Length: 106
Figure 1 (cartoon, rainbow, N blue to C red):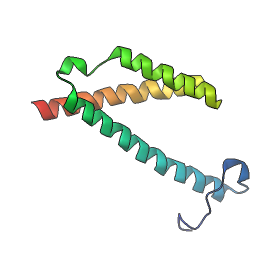
Figure 2: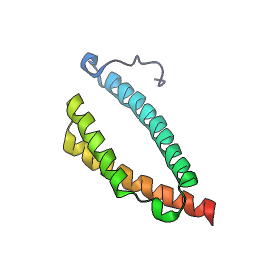
Figure 3: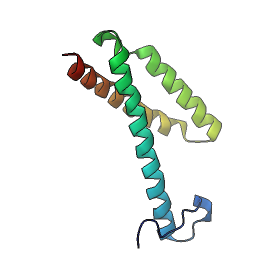
Figure 4: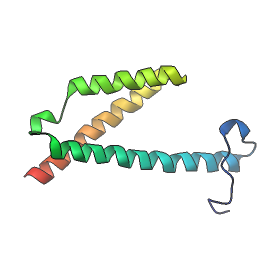
């Protein structure tokens, strides 16, 4: 069955694994698109920051984690899970920004 042949239903409305898998695949496509956009901002940061020492910003990391925690609490999402995911995402983003900074500045 093609990926567009199954209607995307809300999780509570799914009654078959085909519907569940179609929903997960749809969400994953959206997440990848959002991550692409987020990493575009990392590219912009690498272009804008004046020097390599500015790439790692511990204050900003703590700020992002606090905002994610507040959003998770507001939405009723597992806060520890979101913290773990975002710790990894932020560190991956910083590594990406260092890579872009070095490739474009050297």
